[in-house]
Image 1 (cartoon, rainbow, N blue to C red):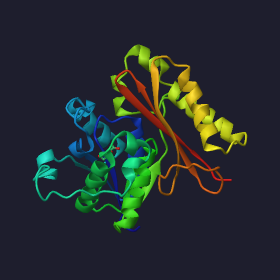
Image 2 (image 1 turned 120 degrees about the vertical axis):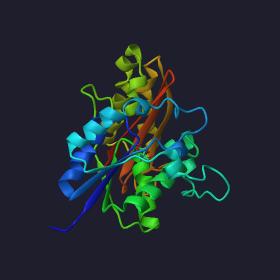
Image 3 (image 1 turned 180 degrees about the horizontal axis):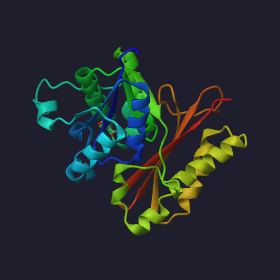
Length: 270
Ligand code: PAF
């Protein structure tokens, strides 16, 4: 068999979504690596860099990775990854226009940080395959574009979103939800399911599809809708005319107290 290596990049605070990617990688590769690095360049001032749950889960994460069959864990310090910090002559990898799209518009600079760290991880570890979860839908589109355009010799494999029994997409940040918030959190996926139902009944007007999802969130007094996005899966561009020949990424972001929840589903083309 040809030697192949797989990389599952993570920021720690691992859950079943990460471990399902490790299992996918284990199936396809001779050697499986995981990275654990809370990337400061993808956090804006005022976000949760200092309190990110991974700071407390290192031992547990390591044990889970080992049990899932990871051969090698790469866990650099911020100083090792970014020896010059953010000073003069530090490079960034940026994608033109990404901050105008969906999650990019809601977190300016975020995808620049992701593209920079993923480029560094690909250069350092040189994996044959990179494994990302569909949960971060636009991140998958961004990294796919990065790999194509910068000619990384790596194949992107996207694993399905892993959900709790009530539909809530697994996320390291779900631990921030208190009991009341956790009880209403499944409405995020319910909103996407409503959008999907309306689409399967033949609705192709993006605005009507966005309204269908928004109407579910509007019934939840604790929730504030940040956006519902319908984007082209090829380039993340928002779709404003009738859906038809392209696959669409339907994404949602909701505020629940201080916690932001994001989720998405794919809509197949006609
Ligand atoms: O999805 C994540 O956990 C991060 O954005 C990633 C891909 C590990 C880059 O820091």
